[in-house]
Amino acid sequence: MIPVVKTIDEIRSAVKTAKKQGKTVGLVPTMGFLHEGHKSLIVRAVSENDFVVVSDFVNPTQFGPNEDFESYPRDIEKDRLMCEEAGADIIFNPEPSEMYDNALTTVSVDKITKTLCGASRPIHFAGVATVVSKLFNIVAPDRAYFGEKDAQQLLVIKKMVKDLNFDIDIIGCPIIREDDGLAKSSRNTYLNPDERKAALCLSRALNIGKAMIDSGETSAKAVKDAIISEIEKEPLARIDYVEIADLDTLESTDKTEGILCAIAVYIGKTRLIDNFIIGEGTK
Ligand code: PAF
Image (cartoon, rainbow, N blue to C red; front, side, top):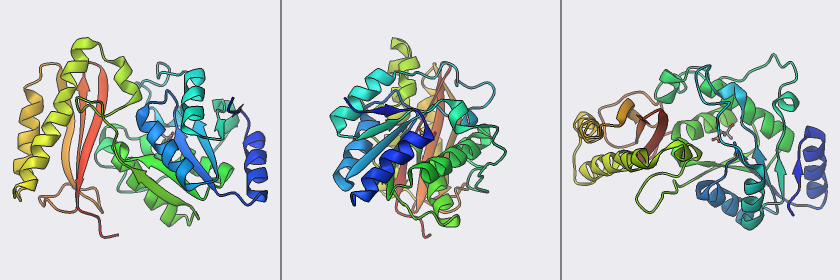
């Protein structure tokens, strides 16, 4: 059975042994309750590294006061099976006290954390940047793997790695969806059967927007309006934001190339996100 270690000393010593044997190290940071999306990250990490660490830590500092830290789903035994199936070598599953021992230091990335999810979750990205920096310093991987569903998170981490000179390759991996189009997320488990059906409005609306751009629409406003109107047809949905943002600045733009089209929608009490990207950023 794949080992689960709880302390920084234990994971450091396992990584040290692997590195002494000349192995390359991949890290897949997660908050656990693993699904096929996480599994795809682990499988990719296993294919590109000799030793793969999965961190499984519900990070308290990235949740706001009225968010779901306490109720966030946890199941380390199920996670263990999935990590083993995917071929990972070890799981790092610390307690918050192990990670934050009277810590006074945080890492924050400016500007690109203020828009999109950052506008409604003001402390979220500082929590993410801080915990990911700590994991990078603890594990010192060659490569780290993140899902493109959290597109803003991925851009924030890439910027942090560049700005702070972490010698780590950041690998973004495609969104994994259910057969009916819903992006896989640990939070999907909060949805009751009616909400689960209603949640399809996210991918449906994004498909409409993407198809408009693919067939030549050049006004981001027109695309955004079409996405909003599709979501508004769903009575259980409440829009947090629908945004078309420049891929470099993450600020709202009216172009339709080099963009992130990102949405956050409450279905009942559950906040879901999804996105598509057109083109590339310049940085
Ligand atoms: O994407 C997540 O699950 C989390 O934000 C991460 C990157 C593991 C940091 O806690």
